Length: 180
Image 1 (cartoon, one colour):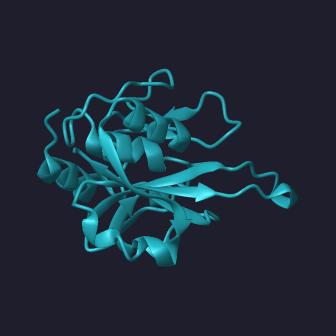
Image 2: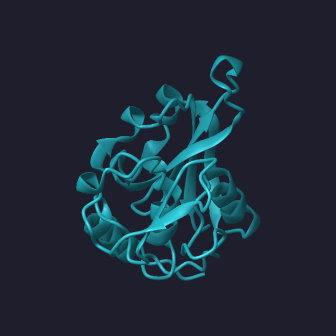
């Protein structure tokens, strides 16, 4: 496995607030199709995309072919990459592409391990089951670590935000280091 952290970072900087290079934006469940086409590189905010849920698609593009160079399969029709947080975590683990630093720990605990993360690693946010909101327990968000505990992500486009300030209702953190 050859992973280029600089290229993953450069992709995140270029597309943090833009439609990814494949020209698609992932939509949340139960949208079908699970994506919508826009011109690649368009600013996301003015598009006001109803149901935009592009976090994992963005991360898979950052670490994948045009970004860091990992082989990331396409799982949702025309969209390039993986658009589901649980599927991306499972794929990275089953393919042996990542080493788990900590799994499903509170953000305050994850902060004690964030210095083991390199630029281009993946942070996965886990939601606990909440029947009041109809949530099942699973990963609900991903972000690209860009250094010193800061992330770049979509869904709400961000760059340089502290990883503890992100998560969309997720209660626990998993830190995934790409490589051995």
